[in-house]
Length: 329
Image (tube, rainbow, N blue to C red):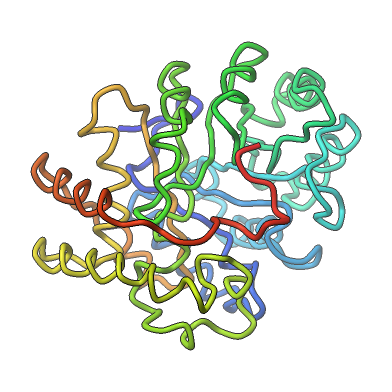
């Protein structure tokens, strides 16, 4: 069984972003049903952020309400929280003042109902040395208020540098059939070298592999995806060609495209030598979608090779994020 911070976690985790960070979040009771379904299915690594939503309603406020209602679930969850982007999510801020403000705010909102197992600066702040950023987080680790230090959306060089400074318990980076960059840019190799588990966010290609999008018109007008290059009108149709190929592979396997996409991510560390533990964290806003995502599909070497061949012949068009957003920091 995979581990984060020495704690057992499921093969597949759960991302909370979509429960609060959207124009119209689902009602809390619907969110609670999805969260409970995740735990029932063994998806006990949960990924949250201080900025997933508004100051009044975000990942942490939702978690506080959830653990108030289900206090018995607190010890079952291994919780990773991203923060340190300023009060208005203005950009990476690794200063000690911002680290302390962010962690203090998260702890205040949680009201002691759940410990933060992993705290991650959402991006590296290149204006502040990592030693200073990590020292501030480790103040809370030493007090027992935070379990360990994670890093998010980083380059391989940052992982190597960080591992020399402090114990890094997880690296959160994007990985999906639509975004395989980390397999070739040294990120997974760096994690393997330092024995750091990879928390793979957006394993469903930001919804591409859920079959909810058939055309660009299916993307809601108020969705942040409207600003992502891979979902732009000029790129969408090209990238949907890969989705159609994945749908065909899933049909042959007897599973849904979402299950194939998530399971491919989880299968990587079992099928390819020298890779670290990889834990995909798909998000979902309904219990039924969580139940679908929780189904782990074992893929043979031949099936993984077939997927590799499909990917090798396809070029995804468009940057992962809008130009102004930092990546691989």
